[in-house]
Amino acid sequence: MVRNPGMAGRIYVVAGELSGDAHGAGLLRALKTLRPGLSIAGVGGPEMAAVADGGVRDWVEDAAVVGLWEVVKHFRWFRQRFDEMLAEVKQAQPDVLLLIDYPGFNLRFAKAVRRECPQIRIVYYISPQVWAWNRRRIPQMARLLDEMLCLFPFEQALFERAGLKTLCVGHPLVDELDEQRLDGVQRDELLVGLFPGSREREVARLFPVMLETAKRLRAWHPNLRFEAPAASPKLAAQMHALAAQSQLGEQLKVTAGGSHALMQRACCGVIASGTATLEAAYFGLPYCLTYKVAWPTYLAGRLLVRLKHIGLVNILAGEEVVEEFIQADAAALPIATALQRLLQDAESRGTLQTRLAQTAAKLGAAGTHERAARAVAAWLPPT
Image 1 (cartoon, rainbow, N blue to C red):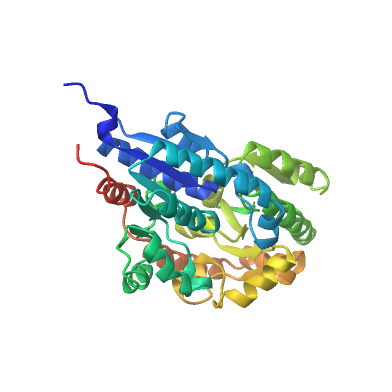
Image 2: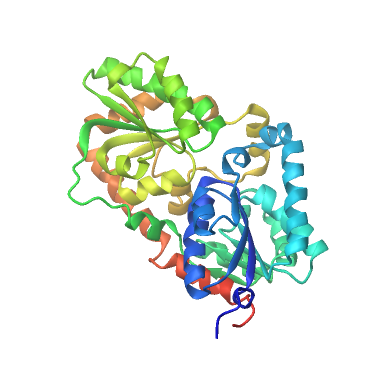
């Protein structure tokens, strides 16, 4: 008998950033193996769009804005997308709404879908870091969601205490990054990696600081070289334009992609706070962390966030493993000083690499995508 595609189930998926797109694509690939003929619709990035055979629209370059002030400036655009997507869900009536990270948008979307379509099961993949900024939202999430798929064991206990069905699936980076390992690669002691983030505003704020850092390091050691991978062609053009003003010449190379390879080739680096810091830990790249947002966003965050550190590696380790240079401290002189210590002290680099490996081990075992896919499939109609 020929399988009716509708029998495999229907899901609508929402991811709003490149990291969520990569994790979502892995989950969708595993889910399609479990449920051939599954109907997939929604929004995400290029990887999810490819897996979904066109059913997922790529919107991440516009959707991936950071901070309260930035979201306020783009409120009308987000409101239009929100209304369009809610209309699509109401028309398609999927079996499962799969929300991937992106909490500012996705938790509001979950509330609207629960109100308009209460029969749709809502599964959240990559739990919001409410343990950092607002634990009072956890009971609300327990009312909205059918299941939470979290990445870290300590998150599971928080959500389960609120009565939310929760499964710790481990971190998808373990699966994704293992495939990116390079055999026989030696670190270049004269190569420094610059990783300014995957969003346009991150690059605009952080890459000029990184370029000034590179100029200071070159004045100290003229033979140093610098490489900066861009997360997308659009960001590559932006970074090329900024690099042209830096007068670093051939000592600076901007590439389209290649961040994982660079994390395995460089001697050390400076990285924008985010998923890339976990990736660097996995590959053993000694680095320091930096970040800047609009001042209204930063001041609001200081009132909400109760953590000593913002770096995921430091949060996971429960102590400062890598140095953090945030907001006013995100300046060329202190960052260059930190990188200079790593460049000239092999023992310090080795100690940091050991601590990074110990922290990366807490990300869990391989098979995250498959575990997450089985959890989502359990909410689909039986075939």
